[in-house]
Amino acid sequence: MRYLALAARNIRFRIFHLRDSLVVRHWLGSLRLISAAVLVAAYAAAIAAAPALDARQDAPRRGLLYEIRTGGNTVYLFGTLHVGKPEFYPLNRHVNRALADSQRLYLEVNLTDTTTVNAETMAMAMYGDGITLDQKLPAALMEKVSARLARHQFPQQLALKMKPWMLAHTILLLEAKRRGYDPELASEFHLLGYAGAEHKEILGLESLSDQFAVFDRMSQAQQQAFLEQTLSELDDARFETRLKALFDAWANADARALEDELQFEKKQDSVFASILLPRLIDERNRAMADRIADIARSGPKSFVAVGALHLVGKEGIVELLRRRGFAVREL
Image (tube, rainbow, N blue to C red; front, side, top):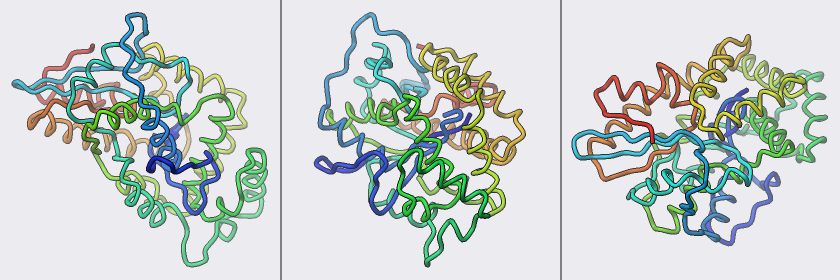
């Protein structure tokens, strides 16, 4: 399993017919990244609807929510899921109250800055200068890619502009959506819709280029292997079982089960496990913990939302903050 990872009102994107560019955000478990172009569309829809937060008493706990305190300052830390289902909402009243009580919303990346998102995508995730994917991949692998794209009715012309790592994420997202896990129902959109409607400040812990660099630093051979392994994973009969286990863990607010999924992934013999996971999880956990510590010390009260797998384990953000002297409690 991996990471799956916005525009103005009145911009209407079809989920996978993305015109000139496709951008991705980093993501949870086997659903590595979400396409940020999809995030753009979903954000616009969320703002247009912008319902009041539902704080009914019977909503079950979803994801992981922590209160981080230092001195008189408070930060709420929420573990998100980057795709979703209608039954995942509304979120629990503790999450809704924490968000309503916060002046700022921090996501991993500020996806509302569409100009920067598009520029960084074209620079790092897409080929330029007339280079296309079919010039980079062996014919046998390109045949597998073409078959998968046809299955999802995804335009090959757009796919040919993508680097292998970007295409791997896109195919994974397409497959997740086919199986009923919708990127438009990601936790981030629920939070963004409310924050935008309430005119809360929306910020990012890191830049999209920081996230893209994790993947773009791979060699061509590593990117090719990553793409091929992703295609093989989708054909594995165990994929659906693993997918459901990950989502059930988040839906049941089960930190231990989420950590088990992460540890399982780390033990796999794959490019993702050996090269990408240390960068995606361990390195970024330390950087994001530093950023959250600064936010907590400086105020004002803020709500920070990152992928749930970043919060679990001894090297997760929660334990890193505890070791730095912050008072942390689960809500």
